[in-house]
Image (cartoon, rainbow, N blue to C red; front, side, top):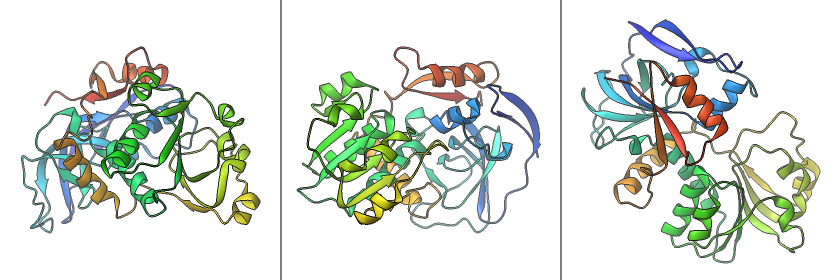
Length: 312
């Protein structure tokens, strides 16, 4: 079928094409877009900072209505049917219609933007990667203080982790002060402390954090690399090797991500994670897509996360 899709070439542009979307396979569903979140990685692509995927791989924080179901998509525990609302991890969620493979979507209660669960699942996937390295005495460092950090922190609190959790970042400082978290504006502020961390959750694209500050990593620490780094990153292999550091790269592409999506829906339903307040700005699919990317880049006052809204 013919469907519209917008995309970027990495030159601060938003273009549109008509895409001949393939029919679904037996293990896919077809999704009609309702909302699509604008991720930080989308903004980096818009700026041309990182290698661009093909245009049919752009847009991955989807929420939409199921219009077709492949004949082998039959799940007893979490069934899906035409008309259901699903949150997806698949691409291209910047298209009016797209296909999603079984295992890359979950059924949600309604079409509220709070159920754009892919970024929440990213954070829970990161938390799950760190979970096996945590004990009651662990010192945890979170590099970053935005959306992902909030969800990771909430997951720690939900699971009763009472470790010392330190954050480095400049985003949402009022929020972090309100919850009593220890937050520093930059890594240099930690230098006069004799801190060493057992678990480092790196949500930052800044290359200098890893390459310049391995002194803060304890022997046999776990380093969760959860952000795409700038090509200028120099990985300090010798320091990490001699300290026997374990590096983990959690990804939405691994099989465990589906379960992180399921957990995200449960935690949103239970009010453990307040995602509704995090999606602060909607943008019309036909007239405001470029504005969505520009606001994601410049982050005007009060902006948390933005999403594209289809009129369906």
